[in-house]
Length: 311
View 1 (cartoon, rainbow, N blue to C red):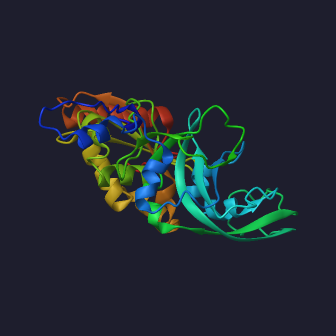
View 2: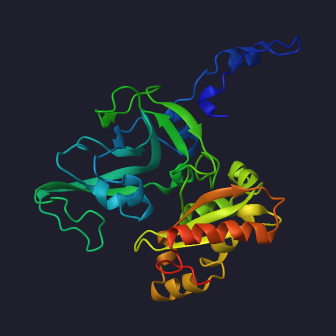
């Protein structure tokens, strides 16, 4: 249950001491950002700003996964972090929500000046001819909450940098460690390889994925998002789709010849693989019956002639 949905009510027990009863009655009915950060050492007396990063045309979550977010955050077109000792950073999510990505100490600033992009930066078109460059140091005490703490930024999402105020940001939820995302339906999702591996490695946090994908046989698609080449396979027998996909999470290729060749050709190719379900089938079907559906999909999409299927 999302933490923000929990409401604390005072109860009366005849033997309860009056001071204990009073403490319960005075407990907050909602959780604010500082309630989650203070046990990890957050000092709200320091000059603090909250930052919700969101920019049209820039996939900040992808930058975060690629380890390029901190460079992106370090330069700003204006001196937005002036008179500030620390920032609490988020990436904008659905609606007015924001995903926590760290607490950073502001150690210094230079500029405005020209800044050179790293050669592998995902957005080489960014203009850094005149920017303020901040020296930011992530406080690792809060790392356990990265990608897990979700807050409601409120109605003022256009104001992406705000001064910290007690009680201003309500916690929506704290996700379990290793949680990937909500299961949206068999035919309505695409999993990146890193998401698949996290889902397989953390069955408790992703129990709905395991339950649903383990309940059916089916035909699935693996897409190499760099080249567009496709592999079609099928899963049947005990464990259903999740059992078969666990082999890909472990090896990257699942024993398939052309996927092995792809990983030899491009060792990091597994990070470019996307997994989806084309058709779910009853687990009572035989292997022969499931493979017949697999063959039909291969014929429709031409994955033998132009894709990653060799059989």
